[in-house]
Image: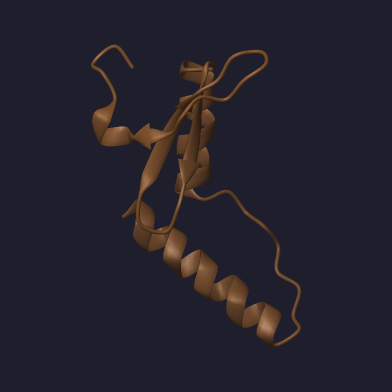
Length: 76
């Protein structure tokens, strides 16, 4: 459902841009998920792509190597 809604939003935005029609950016389930994830795990960054999601550890000065969400530990 998350990726389906994201794909529909992307297609709508693409079609609107191709027609020269401005489109308002709204909250999607994926954006809400990312906000909740950051709230719960502020030391991790969630990267959402068209077909996969990765996570990187974040400190004050560095961003670590990304890894798949399927590799997250139970504590994460």
